[in-house]
Length: 371
Image (tube, rainbow, N blue to C red):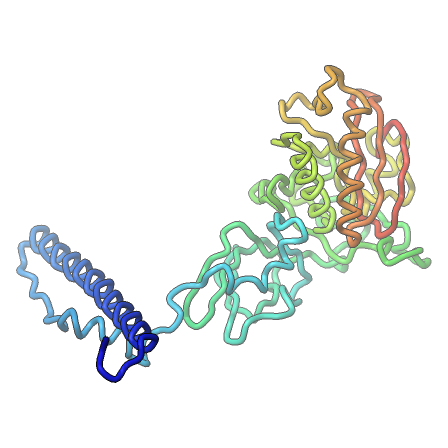
């Protein structure tokens, strides 16, 4: 016992003393390593140049430790941890697997940001520092976050500035034919989901492999025509990608390994939807024209058709039913992603598949042909 201290006070005193000693030990080791590295670097430079290097006098180890602990001018944030980036979580979607956010030029990337934070966006037009707003020029930009002079790159995420609808003239943007959306020239759509897309992702040969989520890339959703026309233009609703990723998660939870979910049909331009390819079964108001629908199947072996995911040694609509059931569960758990789910049988040179969209209301059907 220390004189004048209770047993409890003595335990507190011993604990504080142990912490202080530990801090000094850690600081001493760190300072010793730094000084050793500096000395070895001086010797290396001297050997390379033949010029003696005079090392500056350094403060004592104790002085370095004391300064690091108590100096009020020392930086308070040495790095940005995951907890400090929680404000970006909404961009990742409910699946947590989204890797892009598409924005109109100059619009906000995320609404709520930490005080003192800023965004650094780098792309084809050089590095830009912004208050979390999309650059004015269309393109795909890498994102980094700066907080209290610490910077962290968001390696697996892109900000995409859209090409506005106003850039479309005569049914085209540049040389790429889009056509006309049903209510583009007049009339009132039955819901906001059927309004003409307000902007498009510009897809080039160089950026087509950009991942929009863990399993999907931009090229997966391009209209299957105008093969030699670049750039191409694509509306893509992140809710659709989120729903597809959640469906994969649900399949995996049910014991089905999904290495690859193939997109048989993603975005279809109005021009292609009306007259391109096999138009059997296509709706005049097909959700494919709005960038929020896709026809998909599990294709782990890469043979271009549905796998035997229910393990009954045959490939038919019962395999598609497994995907439908997973998508149904996703809608139950995530009502904001409600939409259409259609099961299609093999037909016209393709195997069975499932149509999934996020039209905003529940729709179910079975069919053959194109979703």
